[in-house]
Length: 595
Image (tube, rainbow, N blue to C red; front, side, top):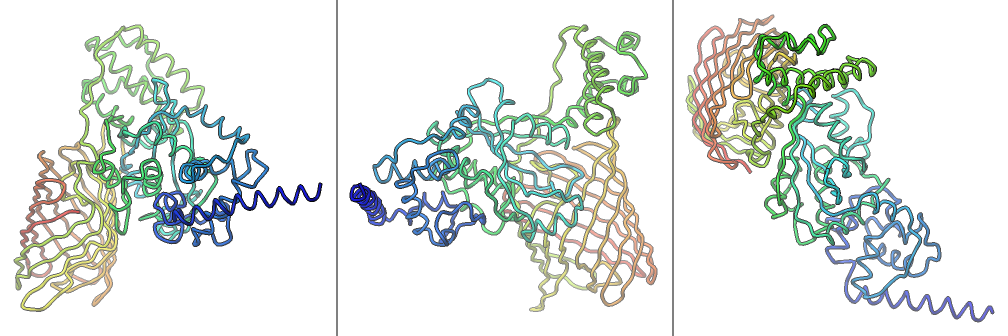
């Protein structure tokens, strides 16, 4: 008996050694797909969780990881849910196809249950736009949806990657997100829950991009998603973020695409969408307006005199049965009730109504709306897709005419968008810029004109249903104080805005602190306006006045006009007039290229 057992072990060992030798001959550990399965751009995996690797040092020794994987598949007798056999179906399927071998059957009940629950048929890339009042979301977000055979996509499952944190301090979240202070995890949950989070709770418009993956490619993605459950990696806001990890999943599904090669030093969600387009992956597009977008559209279709009735219905001051007393058309009554129902739900999501009050009012509103019969569906003007926006990185070349000099100006900005640029594909009134740098060159001499470390803005117009505040901040160097000299400024302000996506106006109070040749502090006030003319053309104007503690007051007027001929370039002109003891005018004309 002992002899037979020894013979059996020898045979198994020989069989495994033969498989390993065959894999070495085929150089499987060097093949692109093995690197994709291990998330290894070069010779080291980007996954940081030791539980993902089977070999000591498997994170950086991809050949050792392949050998260990083959030994487990070929020799392990335990093939239940927690076994290597069941934990790595994507590795197993690929190795079986490459080595023309079968590792047999297992009892992977949890994995089979997942497949039944998902019923995977198609995959959709989902892009929730930026949240107008949240700096952390200003780049937007991307995740994948696994579509089943069911007609309704709401019951499909979303595959998401995000930092795992309960942090509520926005500055601390940004700092840790930039420098890898959080673990990131994949998660899977019903799509309707993600829609409620982004479209309703955070009032973010959602775009869906159906991908043309085949059934076999979808299954390859699902097998790999299973391997990544409960596996963590360090989360980095600029590169190894939510969008970047969707690229890995898609390349595992279709290894012929090179999505990650579209990016160099950062991965921004809107650019991710464009990469999918460029690789020919997008089959069809769909738009899901947010609750905020819906309510703003109701505002445009309800007479101003009837808006008070919507608020009365929402606050319980008016019974839905009395809607007939309002002197409006039947269709406008339908819109009033529909808007009230949407607003009641929004107030409940925000915690302004208890569950009992919400349920009672919501049911009463819908019941009365149903009694009015079918009417005209609210028509939405679909916004430009994020893939139509200008690219994130920008270089500028312009000629400047200043009071005492006329430098050639060279500009560089890694990301992403400012208020003077056309809003096509972007959230109107939102700004987020990193390291926006401008250098002047004249007579062989180079000067730093400005370098903005971070600049954010949220110009959110007040409406009849929404009362957001607008705000703006900037931190960096400029030459706006006490003549043509460089100083460091931090400015944070808040105020209010009115208008819509085509034209808005704002007023802000902006305290500032300056450091440099003469440290100072002041309180400033600014009024401005932006006009989107259409066809990627925008005009911005702003006037401001600052009262300093240790320097004369400063007044400014700025006018900017920009025309983008497409996502890759624009022509622009700016005029600034500043007065602080003396007047100084500055004119710039130039071209901007985006990539």
